Amino acid sequence: MNKRGLLGRICFVVGMFFIGQVQADNSVSTQLDNLSKVSYQVTTELVVKEDRVQVVLNTQIQTNKLTKKARQTLEQRIDDLIPQLAKHYPALKVVGNQRNSYANYSNEGKVVGWTLEASLTLESGDFAEVAIFISELPNDFSVQNTNFFVSTEMRKQQEAEMVKTLLALAQQQAEVIKTELHRERYHIININLNNSGYMATRAMPMRLAKTAVAEQAANDGLSFTPGETRLMMSVDVVISLSEK
Image 1: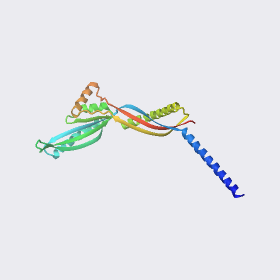
Image 2: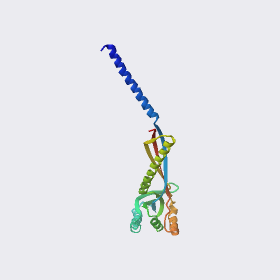
Image 3: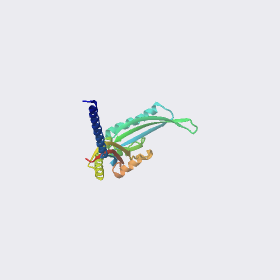
Image 4: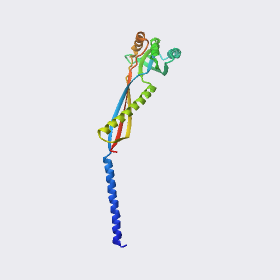
């Protein structure tokens, strides 16, 4: 075969390859044109009743000097109270037990005495028992703070249900988008879950807490009225739409 014929055949093959490559590129471009991405977000929220409460108790001793006897007196108060909790209020658990001391100053800036204090944090899901305990609290104790909240177990249970709801909403929204844009199919290509919640806490003033609980116990059968927590969750979704 002469050189001219060989070159002609090579040029023909190269030309066919180039045409095939152009056709393939055009096919990919057409597929991309028929494929659309849509991003959207769906949200859900749930109001959950708070099922746990923490109560912070405080007891103090005023003394002129930091003596061993003063510290022993403070410790004896706690030592007397904790066994009563275990015996008469089994639903109340001690989750915190702290001590603190600080100087008291005169107007001239001189130390005139000391304050010794002990704080006891209790937690329970039995609001009636907590109310009874506080109404019978010894006079040398005060309620420093009360905090209602949703337990970890309850939160996990409710959030699992919220995830199911969100996924169902995400699919419903995808169906609507597909139908309104006149596409045949959709595919979820990315999904990102976000969750957040805020607590609707209520804290009684230290000096009024014991009186308020005692009055409530007398009026409505020894029970607290817990607040509510609003759990919020959202999901960011990206879907692809296609003709086929």
